[in-house]
Length: 120
Image (cartoon, rainbow, N blue to C red; front, top):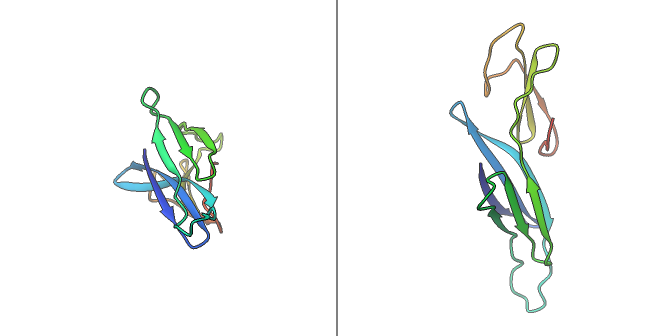
């Protein structure tokens, strides 16, 4: 997995990306409000570090001193109706495997949401 920090006008973000089938998937985005700094310097983006012993653990150190620990698992799951769904940012890529064998990032249908999907 790849972790990226991004900054916007009102918040900082931490994005976690994975790669499969020649495509990068945005799997998780966490947002943190900008913290006002008393000396007028720009707000700091969160500091992120992957755990050295467990590659599925990400620690986020925020500007206000909070430490968050996130444990990720990349499990593939297909429903009883043989439908698979893959998270890709604000989209869920959906394929009924009993009807068509399209692997992600190709899909039979796409559900679009107003914010990044955290999990299915």
